[in-house]
Length: 59
Image 1 (cartoon, rainbow, N blue to C red):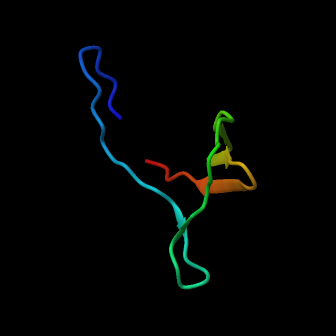
Image 2: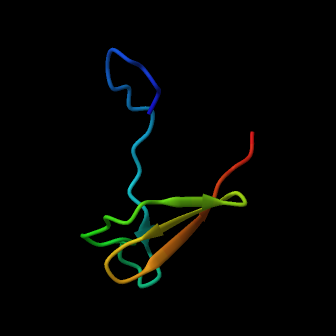
């Protein structure tokens, strides 16, 4: 999203999926209430039964 004091501006929406079995399944299941953590260019997100790590692109 873009920071805008007047309105919410969504820039991109993405649902990461696992396609290892040939079927797209969500990587994270409800609930995923833990705060996401960014460290050394990596984004860590914890869901109900797994931890997912994404490499963030550098600009």
